[in-house]
Image (cartoon, rainbow, N blue to C red; front, side, top):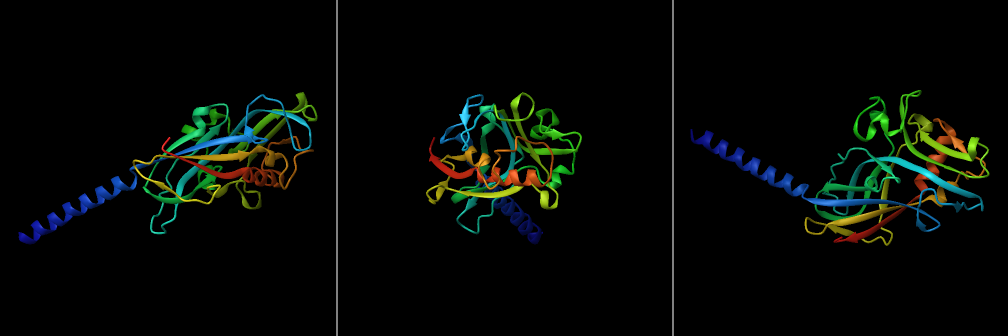
Length: 250
């Protein structure tokens, strides 16, 4: 009987310790704010710009998928739980560009995240929530998700109505357009996340690099399917992520 009481007491103690740890582990909040820039200024949809080649253009739609976001802790013993769902970042909807993520308290030097929908989730077909095909990011003809989409118009485009359209997807082999990214603060400083110290991280995207990256898009006004070109444009897109700006105690 005494042994049973001891075992039961130990079990209760273990539950208390585990419960306290779990509560502490996710008791803080990290706010991620995505913001796109053109020529150093926040992107405005339907505004006329000039690309790095001096050509006029305007962006009418810009969306991409991200997910599996987690802090990158300076303490190697703190392992981030990468469980966040997919989010559709849509620059026509300011609410979608801000994500509040429950995280463990700790000292960090950046974040890790995935850009695009990976092969495991692609293989599940059409889904719900941010992955609902009604969001306009699913190829019914190809049974797969578009990882990022940017549309607009330019007088120099040879497409009908002078449109430019980049619907970038694909996750197989050399044509994979899904990326796992680590981003660090622009001044390389660490930051402390606690329950009391709510941190806002701005993730900046420089769209100039999209048009004038390793694969300049001067003569490419459309890409609407997976393949080698989509992969190259995705490399430009990943290069638009410029780093993090940290703002404590908003």
